[in-house]
Length: 238
Image (cartoon, rainbow, N blue to C red):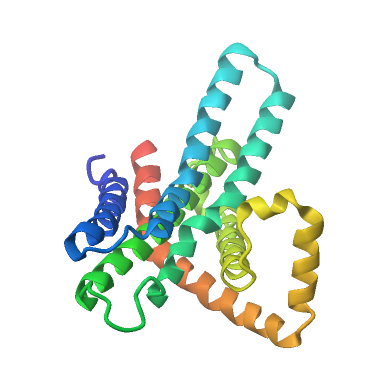
């Protein structure tokens, strides 16, 4: 069980390390704090916070207000909010463009910014993958509670694949159309910008390439880094 905890502990440490590097950059090199990076770290943690709140609500409903319809409504709302926030975590991979640096004469050495941005990007990607792992695990518990080997079935893996595709679409919308999650509060404006953007055929091709490359990248990382932990948990729980 201690080995299983290494992954979440390592992800927490990576988040802390990235945040420390971002904050230290200011006093070390006499620069203002680059607050968008700090905000992005907070946004990358938000989906896990939503899952935590959702778990507490489910436990309260089961213990105090046992009602199947209410439980399903709460689970559905939590999943929707979680899915809308999830691209914010993986979006940190786009920080690799080093847009925070001055075009010339930046006092922060490049080696420092390389490590800082890599830590930031990896923390966001791993935050997202860990969220997907938790949801896959919860899905299996709900849908296949009596299956001795539920991960042998393809449904939870298809759910993972669909989630990674949707995350990749969300990153594209954030990077190329500059959408944020809260833009959905203005659906007419959101729809208008979306239609205007994809009226250009080249943008559809860019979307397809962007989503395929990012989804495959996330899937490979999921299989290499995260899925073994999931299967280890399943083996221990048998």
